Amino acid sequence: MEVARLEVFEVWMPLVSEFRTSFGSTRLRPALLVRAVERGGEEGWGEVVAGEGPWYSSETVWTAWHVIEDYIARLLPSNIESPELVGERLSRIRGHNMAKAGVEMALWDLKARMESKPLWSLIGGVKRDVIVGVSVGIQPSIDILVKTVSRYLEEGYGRIKIKIEPGWDIEPVERLRREFPDVPLQVDANAAYTFLDAPRLSRLDEYSLLMIEQPFHHEDLLEHAYFQSMVRTPVCLDESVRSVRDAVAALRLGSARIINIKPGRVGGLASSLEIHDFWSLKAHLPVWIGGMLETGVGRGHLVALGTLPGVRYPSDISASSRYYAEDIVDAPWELEPGSVIRARNRPGIGVEVNWERLRKYVRRSRSFTL
Ligand code: OSB
Ligand code: MG
Figure 1 (cartoon, rainbow, N blue to C red):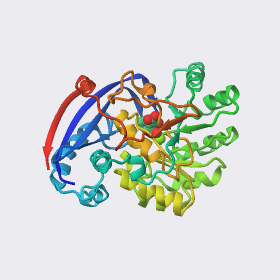
Figure 2 (spheres, rainbow, N blue to C red):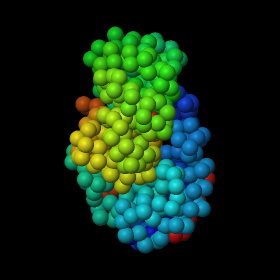
Figure 3 (cartoon, rainbow, N blue to C red):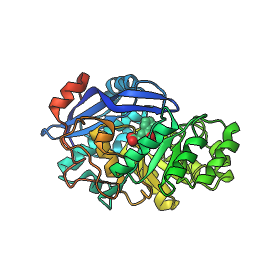
């Protein structure tokens, strides 16, 4: 592909409700949308999922902008044979996976569009129906949590994940289990605990949770391994898996039985596919696709990954309306019966950016010639 330029748009999107995790709270979600434009005029879109502060990972929208402008746009050649090779080309840049991923994903979308193929089939997807759930932030009270969860269940979500932190863990889980005995339920700590909390956390074993996601430090595989040996409930890693190397180490150590794959965290779709192939096809363990409150562009990429054969738990890919009153794409993602979001049979990610809305939410934009 002859890529003429990369355009980057910094957007700030108001969420329909505040989203609170153990590391912070968001009402206005920033994102960088990346548009790769090919000589013939075809385009592809990607999204950088870094937030306004270095809380989930060390990246922010500001670091990502800097790294795209000063390093990625300068290192990338205009002649890009395939998005699979982008990782190698950018390997001199240590870290900054979210910045790399936003650009790489735009090139995958571009490639799919140039071949007039849906992205999901280009990357080896096997089923258009992606089973999804909803990720529920920390609520002001347990009563409000119950109301919030009931509303999502009524909307058709078949799996609930709640965020936990010290002081908001056993009690909300116990109450949800009492109110909704059969609902598939899981928790995500976003690394909020230390190993001293392990005895308390192991009480979660009583509530038949699908998994306990990332209880301990974001760079720690050993504590997760000790903990996995203490509990029946599967441990799932999010923050601690940044590449297939981490997945290999996690398997050898027994740190987890499940991996949440987020393309932003691992540097793009090629790295996501490597982790998927290793964990599911080689180790025969399940994966699912995580979310970062993406706009419709980033979610298009998540949906494509959700069609892979190793995705065997519901993914954190909710409908556009769960996040934004107005998504920036022409056809917002909608929840179908059966707690499903369906990958589209249209070229690329299957949605087009609505320019009028993009203009409404953009704060700065720039074009970089390759
Ligand atoms: O840990 O999965 C996470 C959102 C922002 C940062 C981290 C996480 C999340 C979510 C939201 O859980 C999932 C979604 O996009 O619906
Ligand atoms: Mg998580």
